[in-house]
Length: 109
View 1: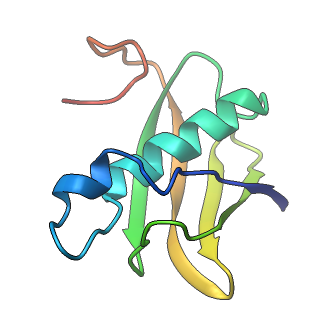
View 2: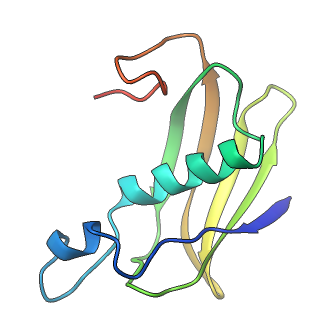
């Protein structure tokens, strides 16, 4: 398993509206940061991808240091886990996809 820092700025704009007075990082931002980190490390699946599964286990507050733990499986999928110190934040599976979407990253929506 490879471990890398998963930086998310304490002043990320998503905190402002999610939720006023009690800022929490939305899961979609965690997934996007994970995919960006994997792409930068050259570990993201080639072509298109999709998030096959994702489980969010605890909230991320502004300024928390996160780490991304990931491994590439024999079929090209990537299993990942996100941690804040000794606390599990999220985990899931990213799989190669042959389906393109409008935005070109394989995301739906």
